Amino acid sequence: MSYKLTPTWIDVDILGWELEGDVRDCTGLFDEHDQAADDRQAIAWADLTIGTPQQWRRVEEAGGYGWYHYEA
View 1: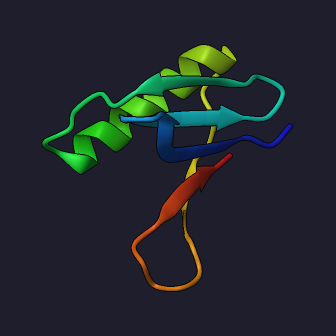
View 2: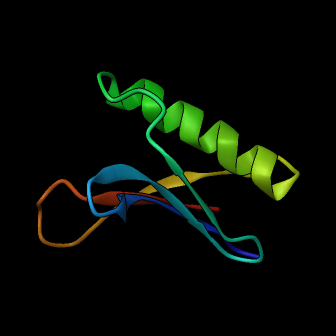
């Protein structure tokens, strides 16, 4: 199964992460001051939520706006 982990708005004023695939869930940000730390913690959360470690790769969104997601 493939998974997608996306930083996004999870509520009107709450930034967080959305996990899509066999398992679907969302959570708030882990570290709003350090994007790299937040990404690492979000991936760890996704692995825990899925139940097994995944090989995640960062995918830059088209358009050059800095948007990205992870795929496993």
